[in-house]
Length: 294
Image (cartoon, rainbow, N blue to C red; front, side):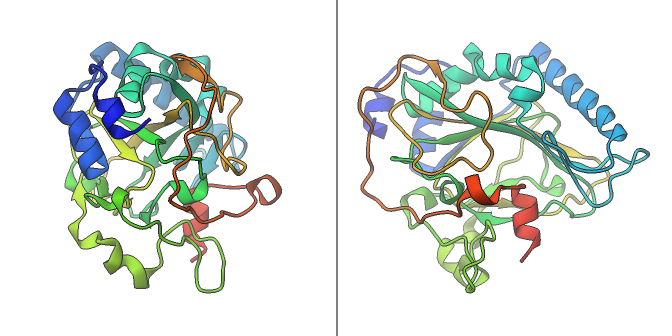
């Protein structure tokens, strides 16, 4: 579906102005719209998994651990595939709340792609360099959207996500270095062209929901506070978007229709997207491991 088709459907969760901002700027933010009881449940689940990580000495299928992790001081960079780690997260992914937001942005027929729970710890270890999402998992069109829920208040000091307005309508940058090694980020010599100086910080109180288009240039800076900044992320697409490479972080639910009906034909956007590494053969750690190799 085109943005014009989507915006003609009545809004479900987001306001019409928020939807228009998303299609105009490539992102939108809705302060504190997560129902309070739902937010408390997500916060508790996050705390439970952080506590469980104390038992681990190395990363595994669900936990991506940072270099400073120990039983005394947990350092979880990412909870991978939360929809497989606990039934609650799949219930959330298929809830009216989240699928309604997704439908507001991709159309009435919604497909699930992936999920993760990221943590930005004090000290700057989880800086996320400027990048776009779609080069890692190309689709036949550019409907994929990442929807995030802030578990705690996010300020300019906690290293919020920052997005470049309108960059979703620009070029897709290479996420390889000059030696053709995948880095998961835009090369430093192309950052000016990507407009990173114009990036807008997406701050907001706990319960804020953000949405970022798969082409939008974004990143995040150091956490300058003494508090951890968790961010729960779900990726959806229109039902007529089909991946043409292996997913880097597949789940057992990847590709399921979570709202509406399956597509009979793909929507093919003619704008090209570079080919990513063969994740099925090479495997994928996380954006943190990819970018740390630079």
